[in-house]
Length: 298
Image 1 (cartoon, rainbow, N blue to C red):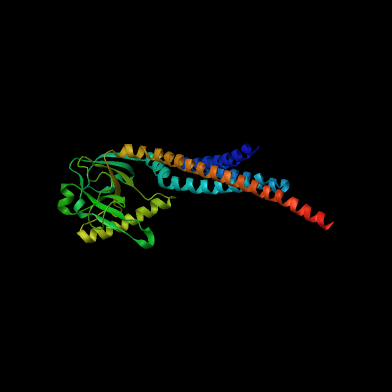
Image 2: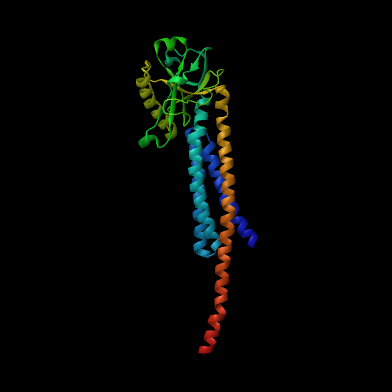
């Protein structure tokens, strides 16, 4: 019975965490899919409430612990899943549904490829590492450094007109040392487009910071930015392969967090069972003292 109690307090909340994290993290962005994902969390919370209701009638501590641990698993699983979805999964699904363009000329207007998921530039395109900028806004972007460097060819270098920017976070100094993605690889000339994704707070913040960074970089290096909406890319050796790995990264995060939560669940189950046993033993030890005192009084 002891082993069964510990096993239940470990396995049930952990299973709820895994299911809810997986559902909220990996389901595609369609309305029906997201409703289904969050319905799993609602069911989990309802099950936890039911366990607590059983405890109020039976007074068995295991139902109280299962209800509390289950509710915590639902909340933490939903938060973890939503974070993974926002940072990894949503980007993958959005990129998966968009076009890939090749032979892109960086000195040509960017509007023709504004719907791209990935871009492959013409030979001779490079990231201008001499005119990079590390932009930081403590009020909006926290302590993150948003890095930008112009994507240039011979024509854009002659006119100082920039339509495409290589970007990254925490991979540069304020005005030098741009090392984001494959920017230092001479053979790399493709990029994964970084866009403002509706419904993603993370993507919206990054896009906003990069837009502000381009204004500072253009003023600092006297660059022209003829396109109202410049295109930002994560410079890559193989942008299409990088997009395809996005869902894999989300799965990796789900697995890692599930293993960590398993460790926490084992510890909590053992500790709660031990605490319950200790309280029972203390109560049992107190009885003879009370009984002998009552006998003497009699």
